[in-house]
Amino acid sequence: MKTVLFAVLLCVSSFSCAQETPTAIHVSKMKPAKDLKNIKVVNAEDPICHMKTADFLKDTADYKGKKYGFCSEHCKAEFKKNPEKYAKIAK
Figure 1 (cartoon, one colour):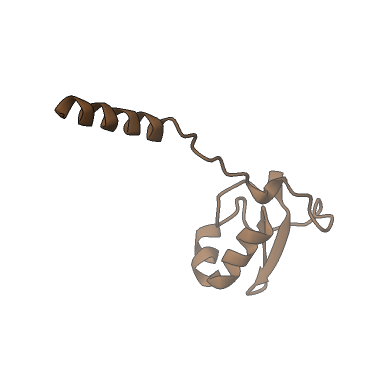
Figure 2 (spheres, rainbow, N blue to C red):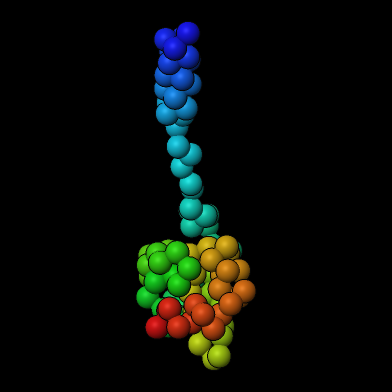
């Protein structure tokens, strides 16, 4: 009986370990809605996901007279939820 139980547990654990881990596709692969090549932003990297804004600038937001750059609309939306917190990170 112990052998059967051990075999069942071994099979279950091997199947659970064989599952692939899902990979996330970052939304920065989307094309920007507007041309942002000549836009100057105050942050060198996205304050949400820390991607370099010089390479992946897809959207911007103004906060307290400064323009912040983001790699995606998602990161911009997260920034707008708590801009004071992320503005400190972006400096």
